[in-house]
Length: 135
Image (cartoon, rainbow, N blue to C red; front, side, top):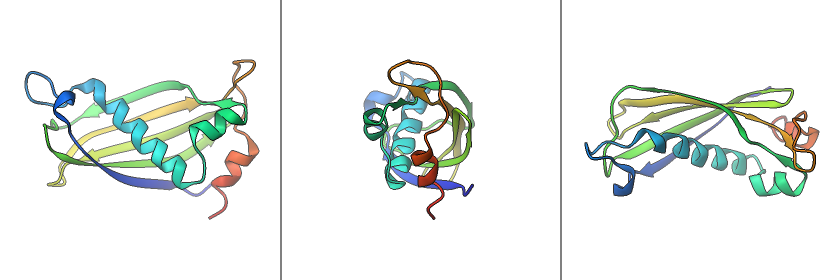
């Protein structure tokens, strides 16, 4: 399988910072989701499309590591890579850097394919897997 990646930029908003002026740790999974959503859109899929076709993708696991804080008004580049679809699971890896190129954060999100009717795990739909084999 080919690795797919997408870089997006995002400016830190005031509401995302804590009393110390740093981006609060709870915002990083939100940043990951933004990048992941845009990567899926680039590939011709969306969460809405998937749900309309009977599949949901809830989060199974999230892992993060922090290196240096991001601050209000920083312009961040979020690198998102999708390089693993295994049965019912899909993993995205993330890397966030500031404008100076400093590594802010790395992390991953693992999602599970779930049938919308039964709410049970299911294999990745073939049409979804095929999207990543087109290029």
